[in-house]
Length: 133
Image 1: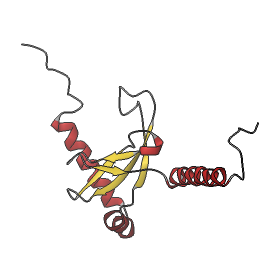
Image 2: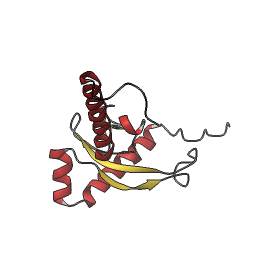
Image 3: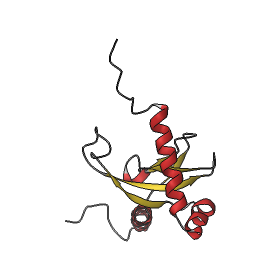
Protein backbone atom coordinates (compact mmCIF):
# COMPACT_ATOMS: atom_id res chain seq x y z
CA UNK A 1 0.00 0.00 0.00
CA UNK A 2 1.48 3.40 -0.98
CA UNK A 3 2.25 5.93 1.72
CA UNK A 4 -0.24 8.79 1.96
CA UNK A 5 0.80 12.08 0.44
CA UNK A 6 1.42 15.04 2.76
CA UNK A 7 -1.41 17.55 3.02
CA UNK A 8 -1.18 20.11 0.26
CA UNK A 9 -0.90 23.63 1.80
CA UNK A 10 -3.56 24.87 -0.66
CA UNK A 11 -6.00 22.01 -0.15
CA UNK A 12 -9.63 22.46 0.83
CA UNK A 13 -8.88 21.31 4.40
CA UNK A 14 -6.37 24.11 4.95
CA UNK A 15 -8.74 26.66 3.36
CA UNK A 16 -11.47 25.54 5.74
CA UNK A 17 -9.13 26.07 8.72
CA UNK A 18 -8.30 29.60 7.50
CA UNK A 19 -12.00 30.39 7.05
CA UNK A 20 -12.84 29.13 10.53
CA UNK A 21 -9.96 31.12 12.05
CA UNK A 22 -11.16 34.34 10.41
CA UNK A 23 -14.70 33.73 11.70
CA UNK A 24 -13.40 33.02 15.19
CA UNK A 25 -11.31 36.21 15.17
CA UNK A 26 -14.33 38.23 14.03
CA UNK A 27 -16.40 36.85 16.90
CA UNK A 28 -13.80 38.01 19.43
CA UNK A 29 -13.99 41.62 18.21
CA UNK A 30 -16.27 44.23 19.73
CA UNK A 31 -19.45 45.39 18.01
CA UNK A 32 -17.78 48.73 17.26
CA UNK A 33 -14.79 47.08 15.58
CA UNK A 34 -17.04 44.83 13.49
CA UNK A 35 -19.12 47.86 12.47
CA UNK A 36 -15.98 49.77 11.41
CA UNK A 37 -14.76 46.79 9.39
CA UNK A 38 -18.10 46.18 7.67
CA UNK A 39 -19.23 49.76 7.05
CA UNK A 40 -15.98 51.73 6.89
CA UNK A 41 -13.56 49.18 5.45
CA UNK A 42 -11.25 49.18 8.47
CA UNK A 43 -8.58 46.49 8.68
CA UNK A 44 -7.62 45.27 12.17
CA UNK A 45 -4.19 43.89 13.06
CA UNK A 46 -4.45 40.42 14.60
CA UNK A 47 -0.78 39.51 15.03
CA UNK A 48 2.33 38.24 13.30
CA UNK A 49 2.80 34.73 11.93
CA UNK A 50 6.02 33.20 10.76
CA UNK A 51 8.04 30.02 10.27
CA UNK A 52 6.55 28.37 13.36
CA UNK A 53 3.13 28.29 11.67
CA UNK A 54 4.17 28.33 7.98
CA UNK A 55 7.09 25.98 7.37
CA UNK A 56 8.25 27.46 4.05
CA UNK A 57 8.44 31.05 5.37
CA UNK A 58 11.76 32.56 6.42
CA UNK A 59 10.35 35.51 8.40
CA UNK A 60 7.19 36.73 10.04
CA UNK A 61 4.45 38.88 8.52
CA UNK A 62 1.64 40.94 10.03
CA UNK A 63 -1.88 39.59 9.55
CA UNK A 64 -5.07 41.65 9.37
CA UNK A 65 -8.74 40.82 9.70
CA UNK A 66 -11.15 42.58 7.34
CA UNK A 67 -14.63 42.31 5.83
CA UNK A 68 -14.84 41.64 2.08
CA UNK A 69 -17.74 43.66 0.68
CA UNK A 70 -17.65 41.72 -2.59
CA UNK A 71 -18.54 38.32 -1.14
CA UNK A 72 -19.52 39.35 2.41
CA UNK A 73 -17.06 37.17 4.34
CA UNK A 74 -14.55 37.74 7.13
CA UNK A 75 -11.01 37.32 5.82
CA UNK A 76 -7.60 37.10 7.46
CA UNK A 77 -4.65 37.94 5.21
CA UNK A 78 -1.22 39.58 5.14
CA UNK A 79 -0.26 42.59 2.97
CA UNK A 80 0.97 41.70 -0.53
CA UNK A 81 3.11 43.84 -2.84
CA UNK A 82 5.39 46.83 -2.36
CA UNK A 83 4.58 49.40 0.31
CA UNK A 84 3.33 51.98 -2.23
CA UNK A 85 0.83 49.50 -3.70
CA UNK A 86 0.04 47.06 -0.92
CA UNK A 87 -3.20 45.13 -0.91
CA UNK A 88 -5.03 42.42 1.00
CA UNK A 89 -6.62 39.58 -0.96
CA UNK A 90 -9.89 37.84 -0.25
CA UNK A 91 -9.54 34.04 -0.26
CA UNK A 92 -13.17 33.56 -1.30
CA UNK A 93 -13.56 35.80 -4.35
CA UNK A 94 -9.94 36.91 -5.05
CA UNK A 95 -10.92 40.57 -4.67
CA UNK A 96 -8.08 42.98 -3.96
CA UNK A 97 -8.47 45.47 -1.10
CA UNK A 98 -6.15 48.48 -1.00
CA UNK A 99 -3.87 48.52 2.00
CA UNK A 100 -1.44 51.41 1.66
CA UNK A 101 -0.60 52.97 5.05
CA UNK A 102 -1.68 56.62 5.46
CA UNK A 103 1.90 57.71 6.13
CA UNK A 104 2.97 56.34 2.74
CA UNK A 105 0.06 58.09 0.99
CA UNK A 106 1.06 61.35 2.68
CA UNK A 107 4.74 60.97 1.67
CA UNK A 108 3.75 60.21 -1.93
CA UNK A 109 1.45 63.27 -2.01
CA UNK A 110 4.16 65.44 -0.47
CA UNK A 111 6.68 64.34 -3.14
CA UNK A 112 4.22 65.17 -5.92
CA UNK A 113 3.44 68.59 -4.43
CA UNK A 114 7.15 69.41 -4.12
CA UNK A 115 7.71 68.36 -7.72
CA UNK A 116 4.78 70.48 -8.96
CA UNK A 117 6.00 73.45 -6.96
CA UNK A 118 9.51 73.04 -8.40
CA UNK A 119 8.10 72.92 -11.96
CA UNK A 120 6.09 76.08 -11.29
CA UNK A 121 9.20 77.88 -10.06
CA UNK A 122 11.23 76.62 -13.03
CA UNK A 123 8.56 77.84 -15.43
CA UNK A 124 8.53 81.31 -13.89
CA UNK A 125 12.33 81.48 -13.95
CA UNK A 126 12.63 81.86 -10.18
CA UNK A 127 15.06 78.93 -9.97
CA UNK A 128 17.38 77.39 -12.56
CA UNK A 129 17.43 73.80 -13.74
CA UNK A 130 20.94 73.26 -12.31
CA UNK A 131 21.16 70.93 -9.36
CA UNK A 132 22.28 72.52 -6.12
CA UNK A 133 24.86 70.56 -4.15
